Image (spheres, rainbow, N blue to C red):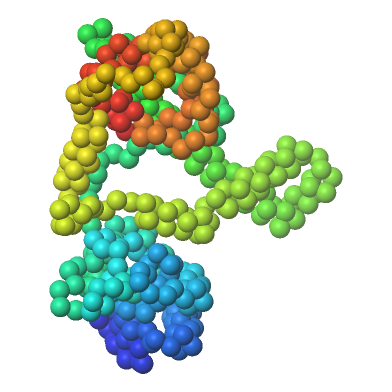
Length: 414
């Protein structure tokens, strides 16, 4: 709930100040109707930046900005790059985040439907993403107006656990290889299941062990960071008080100086990684890539169960088995495969072929839905290659039933 405290009206602008009751955050809302003139538009952006720099609080800027951010937000009319640059610069300097819009791509349509633009949007202060991470906006039906209504809303949709993302530095950390090796040895396959399902279950088991190791390492890193900071502060306090001046000047305590250097390097590295800019980029990326809903038969669907069901039906149709098509009698005009070529196509996958195919894939490619990239499979090839070979042989023999298996990569649960 928002409690209004004051309201100010300006040309092309209405400013509403108040407090968000639930979070007790001071919030300033700007309802904008930007002018058509490029110079006046630029003056409006400068006024907003100046106003924001003088007032403390979280800002939400919304309305009709009469400008687009990129050429793909306009159709049927000319794109003005200079005005888009001014607008994007304003968003950057004001530390605002453009909330991805759901439901529709354009918000303004002319009378004949030939010119479409996205003039209306919500821009929120980046710090609000920490307080309201599930905030979103949706474009409603246009009906009789030439502009769509854009609704700001807060969703709490639970799509289930987040898939594991395996990062390359983990592979070089102490203890990671031991955790994976032990997990592979501890897993007992079910003889009643086919090798594809056993391969999926094995990766699930390994993934669960990696998650536990990751949680322990995160806790250990936090304790080490806190100890480093406290030790560094104690040393600095001793130096400032003059108690440790003789020891430092004579470099008698080499271990202490080494520890100071390591602590400062660690502080610089982790301080940079945890900067506002770094986190702001991650949040923007996460918000832009998040799926808040889908358009199904012209209706916007945001319920997680309905969205997942729609995705399941889509890919089920993609992977379902089709009856073979009879091409009829081959024509003499087409070249034919010789017997050796036919035999090689119908032969079993050899271990060398499987290994060459796996090692020819890029190690640093983005991980698939199962969370494992090829660097992981290559590094632990000696442990997993037998199961990979069995999986490929099972696929070769029973490929026509593979739709029931649903490609284990898509069913390795997070």
